[in-house]
Image 1 (spheres, helix red, strand yellow):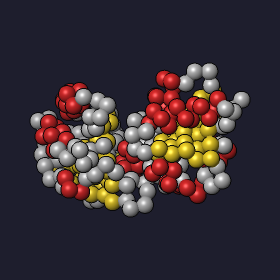
Image 2: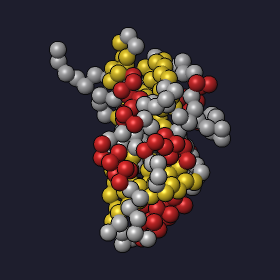
Image 3: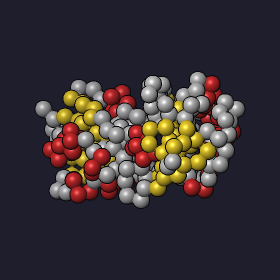
Length: 239
């Protein structure tokens, strides 16, 4: 019986992909994904049927992957990071009926970026996307305020695009109501893949021109501090 595997390939480099994800892709008949994601694993999918769409073709990709399984082909639908975090796991499980589906986890951008920065996510944290394409901005604002009030370490996804130049500045202004201006902030572009860049700054001094859609920001909580070129959020262990 054919199976649909929804796979998180991690941040994009082969060394940060899980063995299970690697093996499943190697054994699949059909690979479905956003063109940029396919390019990240091009060497791994040689000789397979490849189906790609553009950036906003998520539901189209899901539908084509499901149809391929119904035709009898083992199919891998890929997302970067983890397929269950802003990925394709949810849409597929909502639409798929009568087929075998498995979800294979991957390293998220938040964790790839955190590893580059040190240990900024050592305590309670949350992930918030600043994209209002599928989520109303008022809802995003509410989540930012709740996270700020709750003293969570905050990972910001989708911080800036051509159509959302000012959302990150608005988010930072909100968080400055709850955080000190010198709160450490780690900014990582292309975490875990070629072209990686990292900066450590403060909530007050973020360089908005450095940020794009391939960037993740990790904003510390009240106890987060900088140690050399690393960021640490203490868990509370005694030394």
